[in-house]
Amino acid sequence: MAHVPSEKHTPLILSVDGVTKSFDGFKAINDLNFYLEEGELRTVIGPNGAGKSTFMDLITARTKPDSGRIRYHQDDGSDVDLTRVREHQVSQLGIGRKFQNPTIYKSHTVYDNLQLSLSGKRGLLSSLFYKETKENRDKIYDVLETIRLSEFADRLAGSLSHGQKQWLEIGMLLAQDPKIMLVDEPAAGMSDEETDRTGELLLSLEGKHSLIVIEHDMEFVRQIARRVTVLHQGHVLKEGSFDFVRSDPEVIEVYLGRQTRNH
Ligand code: ADP
Ligand code: MG
Image: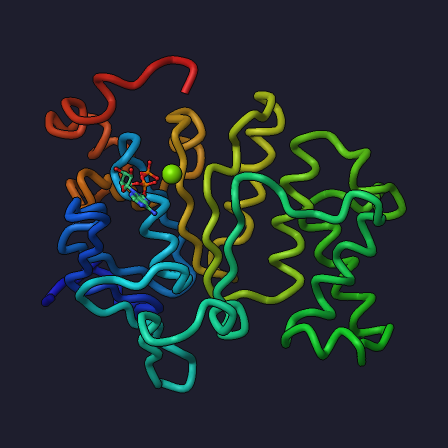
């Protein structure tokens, strides 16, 4: 509980205290404590079955824990216990999640995908009242630049490369101005060049958003690593710099030692 995550005194945006979640008696998440600072880019690694996706399910209220608290610290100083809100409210609170498979609208243009996302920001109803204001257009162009798809604005989303589709989906999250972004294996299936660009993109979001990135590819983790959390059996095994966790005997034993090249 009395966890001081770093020497800097950046305020926390997310506190996970003593969270446990069982499935049929099996503790997928086991007394998990996790603290994310505002503007931080955190990478979470760990073997298959460590509980990484369940962790994101818990933060987004897709899954309810058996015990523990997940507090989202808001700008106005108030806390929201994310274990007590409904899943659809989480995105409205400013917590966005990117799943592994992009959920873009393939027969719409890149621009329209971003516009749909922007218009849906405050829930489905608001999209009926969406106005094509200069402010909204500027926002979309901003996002297009960030995800480096400005030249593809009029292309159908379905015609983009695998990597570009992933960036578009990150852009769709960005259009909603999330405070916290949860990104699950963004580099999966990407070419080396796309992976590299994805790393640059995530690094460019640091400070403006707070990010939790789950990733397997250790080269990619090295590229984006700030503080790295190693999850094992639903619990934080180790936390620290890339070099610290990579050379830790326990981490090597449970994770890196048995990692396959093609993961
Ligand atoms: P990771 O993403 O790190 O690979 P998961 O969070 O997907 O791990 O899963 C953690 C453990 O919880 C696994 O053993 C998995 O089989 C189990 N699990 C996850 N979700 C469910 C579920 N809905 N029902 C039963 N078991 C689950
Ligand atoms: Mg997973």
